[in-house]
Image (tube, rainbow, N blue to C red; front, top):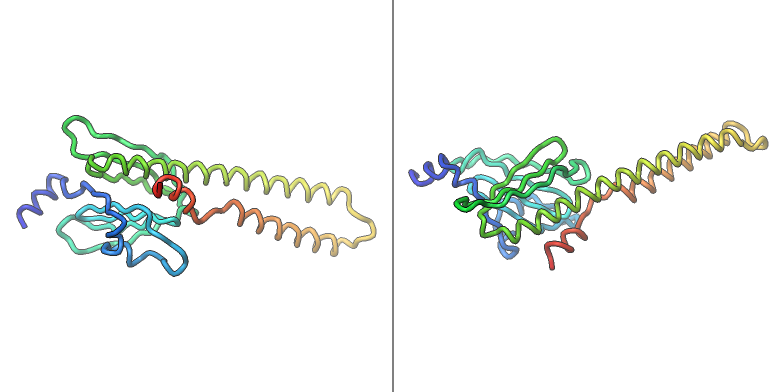
Length: 204
């Protein structure tokens, strides 16, 4: 008990380890992964208090108050709805035991300390998070362009309407086309599954 309290007080309990793939099913996080819908764990960091589980669809954070408390709060951050930004990696100094990976999900800044012996693995995670952040940002730009294109097309049709078509028919046709166009482009650019990126950098 005293060792646990001392570690917690010194912050040593917050230094995480990278969990090997063979042990993913032994963690709390695994219970909350939506395996039924194709979700997979690709990277998992565990401290005495927390787990940071990176799947192809979301970050699952099993948040513990401290190393000696059994209370946990489950937090889920879908990459599609909590864009990743500000990805940074802080390597260890001469006497440091840990490295830090920092990133923001939506408006939530997160910092995870990992033992420096896992630096190679954390570099791969850094690449994944950075690549996801870039792809989401690029897809947002492409979707905005698609929206603007639809707006310009709609205005053009309105100015050059067919006199043989009634306003009601024209409105119905434009509305149906706009709905289909937006749905198609939303499906195309609102990516929810980033398995391809994890496979590129983690499963090499």
